[in-house]
Length: 78
Image 1 (cartoon, rainbow, N blue to C red):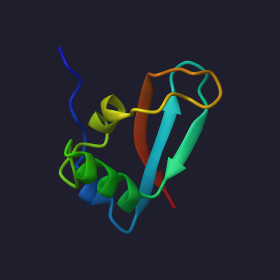
Image 2: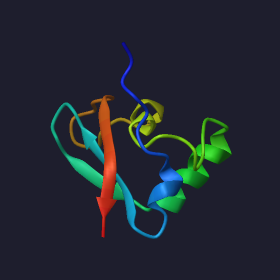
Image 3: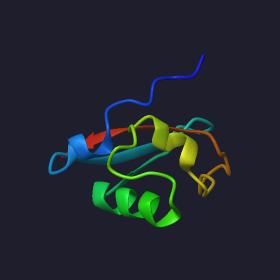
């Protein structure tokens, strides 16, 4: 069974960014929410209605520390 996609990104506008956590080494990186939404829209794979947990499956760049390609995503509250 697939994991639920989570709360839509647009819900977090003005409140949080997106935290990407590598499941290989647990390194995390926080990105601006609007940058993530714009990137998804530019690639044609999502936008503000995309669930925050679903964003993890759309990551293209491997982890800078370990090269891992599996991530968890969550809100990064200010």
